[in-house]
Amino acid sequence: ISAYRFFGSEFAMILENANNKETKELSSYLKTKFEELGKSINHEYVANIGATPFNPIGTTPEMISACSEAFEMAKQIGPNEAYIRDENDLARDMLVWKDLIFDIIDNAKFSVGYIGNANILNGKNEGQLVMQEAFTQAKDNNDKQIPIGTFVSIAEKYEKILDFDKAVVNKVLKHIKSNNIKHNISINLSLDSISDNEFISWLKTIIHNNSDISSQLVFSITAYGVAKDIEKFKIFSHAVHEAGAKIIIKRFESKFVPLESIKDLNIDYIRLARNYTNNIFKDNGKQAFVDSMQELSNLLNIKLFAENVKEEEDFNFVKKANLYGASR
Image 1 (tube, one colour):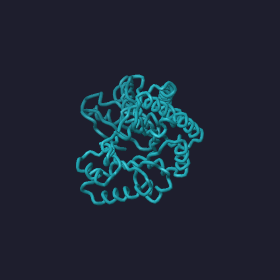
Image 2 (tube, one colour):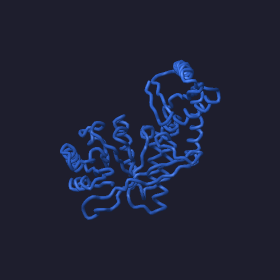
Image 3 (cartoon, one colour):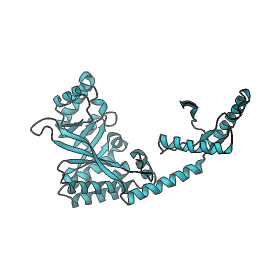
Image 4 (cartoon, helix red, strand yellow):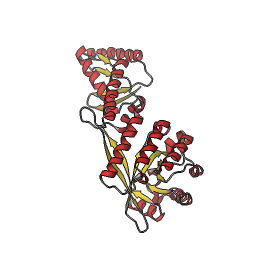
């Protein structure tokens, strides 16, 4: 058990691997202690307890909110009482989330923004915008932003993620054509999608049907995602290139994808994880690694990006190292 004080008289406890029975036993024990304390200070009402099961796809604020609701219920029961939300409450929460996510995806009630402007670092086109990343945003029924991690987790849990990825691709295509976009747009795809034959077939058809802009479509997978199943990634990469689009591995780390494996992946771009270029100007180890990556990328005709370079000294180094592009 870990205990925390928020502020004033607000406290929280986290019980690891505790079931409902054990949680009730603990709350009963605390109630007894509250009552003993109350008698010693001549104060009947010491505290109430609200508890909720851990929600594996919920956010921290959501779980705190659920505890607060349980706490309000406990106050209605009486002094020093507890109210514990059970698994049925959690199941009801999940059904509400499922209905919301399905509605958002089926009716395309989400927006796609474009972030991470990457510009060419050197040569005659220095400074030119070469790539942006599509970033999805959705809101709940109270007009509050849904964390994208929560959104994707629920879509995956209820096998709706393929439909979501399709809807995102369609929105990006419309954006490129409607706004006469000339640079590349990277589109993040789930592991479920790149492993699904039906999705790959659909994607190839979509790319062929939009052959005038197919070369601007760059499908993005994290290095961690690639490492989960390299063989499936190779099949996906081959299909995308055959259709006329491109592939980028983002958040690249050598612990996920060894350098000797890169030549077999058939990719167009690599975007280094931020930690490789953060404070690179004073880290010889990072400098040597990035130089090696740049040499390897040149040999394999892969364009290398640095991501979110903040310090001017770091930016100057990656530019001097002749990386293809960087976002600031």
